[in-house]
Length: 459
Image 1 (cartoon, helix red, strand yellow):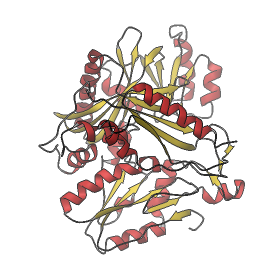
Image 2 (image 1 turned 180 degrees about the vertical axis):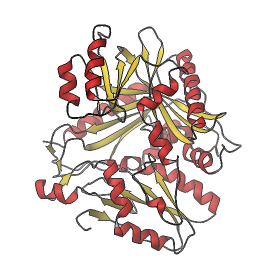
Image 3 (image 1 turned 90 degrees about the vertical axis):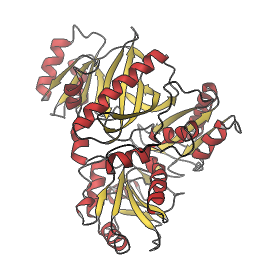
Image 4 (image 1 turned 45 degrees about the vertical axis):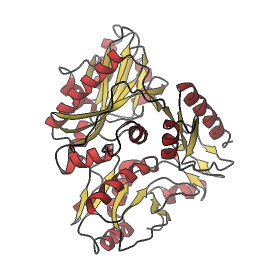
């Protein structure tokens, strides 16, 4: 198993209560909020151990174990200094059966009665919760998988909220046939997506049979076809559901979409009018009620578009935490009254206790705070070589607080850069950046400057 293990700095202490995080590094810091929740409830020191697939030249994080089922193959092909992205399902399967991880779990459970697992998305491929005493702290896995299916989503919501015009196809042959029938009427393009896709993966805006075959010709599966609607705004709403009458709206951000379907980041607060924000809140509460009726409790997100007639249309549900979750945690910490539960505490209570705590406070739909934030994910589309290391800034939470208190006009942080002298394969995140400022111009300037710094690290 040494061929799969890349890095570990885990140091076990029997005096500490542990939980596990299984997932990508970009979501790692959400677990500090869960750590705070468990520490208060257990009245003892709490820490977490993270199993991640990210292969970087260095790690500025405690209790990290980096491993991947692709490590040996990629090293044989590209050398020891290679960074790549691992299919998350294969990663979950490997983690669930890795001897080192099973030994660590056994060791931890000798000093505590149960061991929680935190995940960005509840996935059936992660089966560590089959072990006695190990529990998933999040939405139920099979419910999450079913509700992340776009065909299921559109069927559930077509009579609940406005959705884009769509068709469902069970095979590639049906996809080609139906798309040809719709082509004349849907002249702005047909958006084709596999029923499971995220951040623009496994989806494309198409204008011909040839384009469909080029993109999906080797994939005979179920597809969602929807009418592409030219638009300017791609709002996303983050929420938590604890029951049919308990749907908490964290806020509305604007997604940055490149190439018509590729998500690369978000900005907050939204530029949309208060009327449109109210529509987005109302529709998302309806989605939350539908999810609750299906037994789903926890954090979720909804993506929409606003068409040229200023009408909101539903695009998809993310039955999981989504890319804005960490920044919303930082922002709400500054907006809400001191002591208000975080999003991770709301999810904990929704899953473990079936309802929100009494001191739950929802932020105003149009925030009056004098700060903004934006994010950008720098994803590689072709193989590159890095020439230098960017520092891994770990003070994002502090910047939110300082900007909110007007102690700082703004700053952009660089996160998870893969390091110097690395061969970086397509599909890998080279780095992320988060910009915080007292106005949106400062935020955009910070994002542009940070992207330039990242670009200068590759040849």
